[in-house]
Image 1: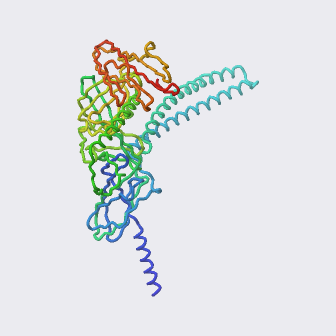
Image 2: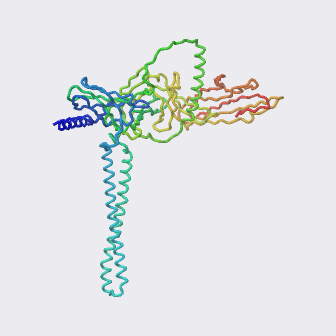
Image 3: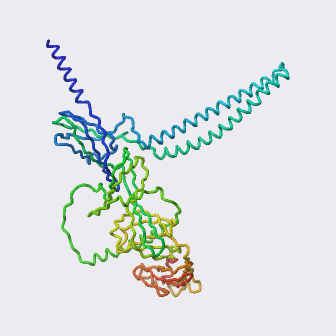
Amino acid sequence: MIKSNLLLCAGLIVANLSFAQKALIQKADLKNVTVFTSAAELNHTANLHLPSGSSEIVFTHVANNIDENSIQIGTGTHVTVLSVRPALNYIDAEVKTTAYSKVEQTYKNALTELKKLQNQKAAEESLLKLLEQNQKISGDNSSTTVAELAKMTEFYKPKYLEVKNNITTLEEQVAAQQDVVDRAKVQFDQVSGQTSGSGGQLIVQVMNNQTGNHPFNISYLTRRANWHASYELRAANTTSPLQIVYKANITQQTGVDWQQVNLRLSTSNPAQGGIAPTLSPWHLYYQELMARDATLNEAVVTRGAAKRLNVVGAVREEAAAAPQALNDYVQQTENQLNTTFDIDLPYTISSNGKQHAVNLQEYTHPANYQYYVAPRINQDVFLLAELTDYEKLNLVPGQANVLFENILVGKTFVNPGEATDTLKLSLGRDRMISVKREKINDLSSTRLIGNSRTQTAIYEITVKNNKKSAISLTLQEQYPLSTDKSMDITLEEASGGKVNKDTGIVTWKLNIPAGGTEKLKFGYSVKHPKDRQVNLF
């Protein structure tokens, strides 16, 4: 009797342990995603029946790279979350999306049909070899009569011709089907990786005091997603406003496809941390220091502008992805430290690491168009669009495709952080305006007087407007600045240009009629000890 009771108790203990170890498996439905510049917050919901007491829940179809410190799980008042940890699922088969399965099946069907045609061709080729071998054996048989050979020829000739024609037809069919397979393979490669539920899990321990259905809200951060801005700048002509198409390029490799979810894009970066700031004493200084900093900032802006002249290129290419126009469905919110875009349409973005373009906003903004050239660096003329009051556009740095007069003319870079009260956007080169910078040898010279050498350089700059309309052109030249008291630099010729002695930049504002030509002279001299060298030109 005692032994029976012990066995019964042991059985109950084993049964309870088995029950406690059996996890509840539940798919977590993805509802919305907030994409940051270098991360994403995924929000899931689930509803499942819980027994009273403790339970282990395994939520599937979540990201496979989760920031453990960011996990938040909300549920009803009767359920207490004891612990939660992310895990990878190496056992369950991957769950394929509908789009993936459709393309995969199309590719498999095309391959199967190709294999059938190849098998038919191989069978006909085998039959052809058999006919050829039989003909040879019959021909080598010396006992075969002429009448028998005639009958064999009458049989083999049409059969041989039929097989050869069949092979020719099958070769054409195989080639055509190979094209079908190749096209299907391209589509299949495009959706490769579009599977969900193959890696991420959340293992949650809960305590429940009321049996029944309970809702769960799950959110977490993952670093395997990001977005960056890009733009299209469109100008019909130099008198029309500038059209700015503000786009987001989203990429994600979270291990779970975002299928028909609501998206929010944020310009903030959650990696900056969640510790609340503390106020420190604020010291106020006189403006002399601020003026010095402003001068340094202006120098940085000048260098940045010169770099952009180098950046713009006559690139003739289309955008990589055709974005979907969503400006009627996007709500833009300007916060103190960032901007968010809420997209009211459900969206699907696959976990394949490929860039997905979304139009956020389209702006039409007044612009002042100016042609610009710095012939010392580059004798090409660039068209600039100058924007004031651009702060309300909430632009962030990003590359832009430039379309002028409905032609893709190149690329530029939008960086509102470099500008002050005016944002200057380069719209590319204009080949209809030619600039030539030539050294005038008769006026340029090198002279030795005592222990000093004086080098003089005089240039003639010719601007020809080949357009059918007048233009406004800003032309800038530059002379060197002395870095030693023994070096004396003199501006010899400026042709009425505005001189900035702090930067050595001379600026001309030219208005050139259609077909007109403007000539300028610009030059400087450098006096220095003859035993020292300077890189003047």
